[in-house]
Amino acid sequence: MPRRLACSLALVPLVAAGCIVPEKAAPNVGFGATLASKFVHRGMTLVDDAVLQSKMSVALPTTFGPTDRIQVEAEGAMELSDQNGDSWFPDGHAGRFTQIEMLGSYQRTFGDLTLRGGIHSYNLPNGTEFQNGERGGTTELFLLASMNVLEANPYVAVHYDFDEVRGAYYRAGMAEDIPLGDKWAIDLDGSIGYVSEAQSAWMYGFDEPGVADLRGELVLRYQYDDRTTLRAGVHGSLIVDDDIDEWFTDLGIDDDPIWFSLGVGWVF
Image 1 (spheres, one colour):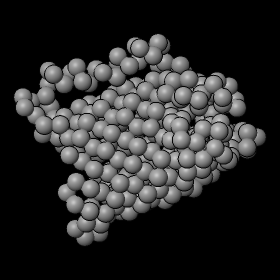
Image 2 (image 1 turned 180 degrees about the horizontal axis):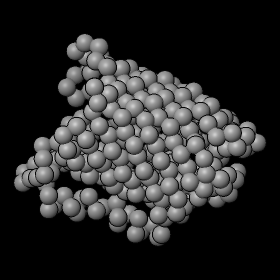
Image 3 (image 1 turned 135 degrees about the vertical axis):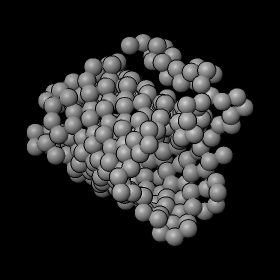
Image 4 (image 1 turned 30 degrees about the vertical axis):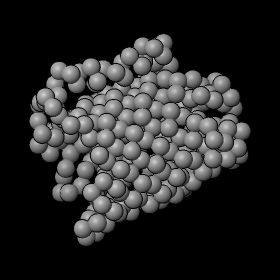
C-alpha cells in the first residue's frame, strides 16, 4: 500500500473527532521518554544496546460516554550506540531513529469490558540494511479487548497487517496494577503471542507460523505530582516455538532477552 494512503488512514480518528467530540472538549496531551537497555519487538531483539524511546499522545473524549476516547500517538526509538550486538537492526546508526510508529485509535467501554481498535503504522528508516532481506514501512489494523476481573485485566489482541505483510499477529495476556500507598504502584504484565506464516516471514525472516514470544514485565511506578510519573522496569521475552528459536540462533540474534528501563511521563 502506498505510504500516502497509510498516512491518510492514520488521520481517520482526527477527522472523526470533529463529529463525535463534545463541544469545547479539552484534549489530554502526554509526553514521555524512556531509556532502555534493549529494544525488543514481539520477541525479536531489534537493538541489543541502549535506546532512547520518545512518545507523544493526544486524547479526546467522545459524546458516547465519559470513558470513551479518540487517541493519536507517535513514538520513536533512537539508537545510542553504533554497535547493536546480537540484534536484527544493522549497526552504525547511533543518534538516529530506527523505528518510528504512528497510531490512531478509538476506545469504548461497556461496563468492565474495554474495546480499543485502530490503525498502527511502522516506518523503518534503515530497513534496506537488514541482514535477512529489505524491510520498509508497513501498516496494521488492530483490535484489543480487555476486562476488569477481580482487579486484574485479562486481554486479547489481534493485529492484521494489510499492507506489506498480509498476515496476523495475536496476543493474549494478563495485566495488573498493584497500589503501594498514595504515590507508588507496581504494574505487572504477562502475555504470549502467535504469528501467522506471512507475519513470521516478514518479522522474523522465517516462513512458518507458530507460538512466538512469551513476555513479562514488572514496572515500579511513582506519581511525583499530578502531571509527572516516573517508572523503572525489568522486562523479559522468550521465543517459545522451537523452530523459530533455532532460526534466531542461526542468525545470531538473542532469543531470550532481558532488559531494563527508566522512564518519565507528563500529562497536560
